[in-house]
Length: 293
Image 1 (cartoon, helix red, strand yellow):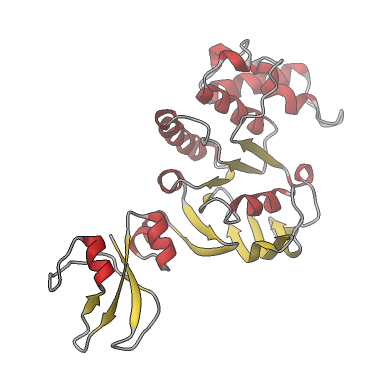
Image 2 (tube, rainbow, N blue to C red; image 1 turned 45 degrees about the vertical axis):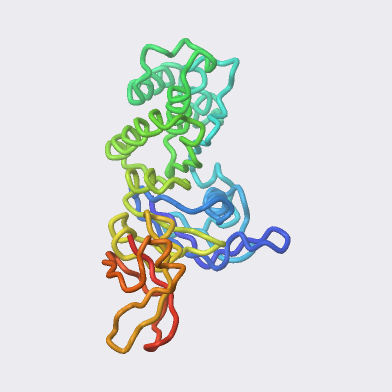
């Protein structure tokens, strides 16, 4: 199910959360929205979901405008950082909840609900835990229940907002690999919000780097790492150093004193730069900024 946002703007008071953002996501694609906190990635996710209305711009699903439609009409499923499970319900009932509250005309019968829930619990590797309550599960198991619940209603689009943020590093890594395998099996159009570049690069087909309400770069993990579009992207997605210098008459970069110090280089030392990004076209002798790994 394809999804598109065109020239979307959203402000909160004087803060521009989204500033003329456009994005197109193909059906079955897994795309990560990557960026620092406050950069606009969650706001974009909420606009795509129908939880926020944009001040300007349009949202389309499979070519049909849905800008003013709510989440239910868009057919989206959500998984949040803090699970949002019903504590008084068992694992089975949490997963079945979305099916049981469907309108009578579209609600499956009990046999179909039982079948669907057991299929999903098998898919998320929780077959033997259907009778437990959330407080009897580990963090990773709770997040799998949340994902199964989101998938139960067969969403057109799956939205994941920092789904592994509350988990420890080892569990996060295990769930990242598991989620990628699950996506390859289901092919549900999926959007993941994260501030963790390793997570985005491991899971996503494509990564959108968002900062200060704008998309700074849109590309595959390989493209972002090898040809970052700006010093910000270079610094954010890799272990980079930002250095300042000038181009001399022979086309060599002459680093300033602060940059030599950050690299531990003495005056006159030769420094090899790998994957250099020059910030803007500048004439020889002019000061500019480069990034390097």
